[in-house]
Length: 308
Image (cartoon, rainbow, N blue to C red; front, side, top):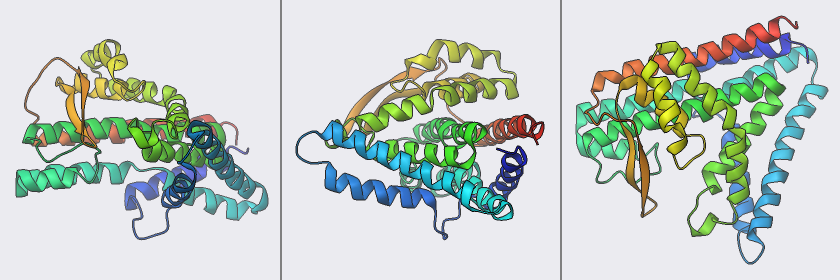
């Protein structure tokens, strides 16, 4: 693929995300992906052979998404391809919206109190927020921001660098499958297992790259030490790495027991310093997210500019 067809839509889509964030009132491919997954799950996740049926559904949806977006690269004229790819880079990135959601929880907690903060946090996390205290809410936001920097921003960019918009949208389907059916509770234990493992594979390199860049943009030696010490201790093979990096950068502690879907989950602690997170520390975390995203976008531009 022509390098200009990679880096020009990337820069344009990245700037659009910085300016506009997630287009909530416009059609979004991830919502369409979710509807497709829900339709298939309701019809296939029953009876016997659930593991096989879940794997087949996952493969069919992933191949279908890749085939559609690849065909657009062939069918569309060059000028239309630039516009098409810019739009879907914009849809594929979620950093501005991610940071806005985190800031909304912090501001709600600060201005409206504990109950309002709990409710606002419940919009962006899967854990039970009804009994969380102020510091637990702040910690939950920071965990979410670090994890989603990897799978909501850097992983899509990594796939884009390798295969353009078709690969980026393939990743978004994989990640959406995991977020909808990749749970370990009874309903999805077998049906969603293949999707969960596929997501683990897809995020293996991006999660570690994210953690490394977080440490590099802040110059935190403790962050590097925490990556090595705590990154592999998370229940997820990937989420622990960016969380460990941020815990080291801020010198705090993440993890511990939380309730998910009515089940108490004993997550390992990541970090050593149990302390109160201050409201203003969110600004540093937002800087880290923006800096890491900018570095990856710049690296992709440099890589593909030379092939223009």
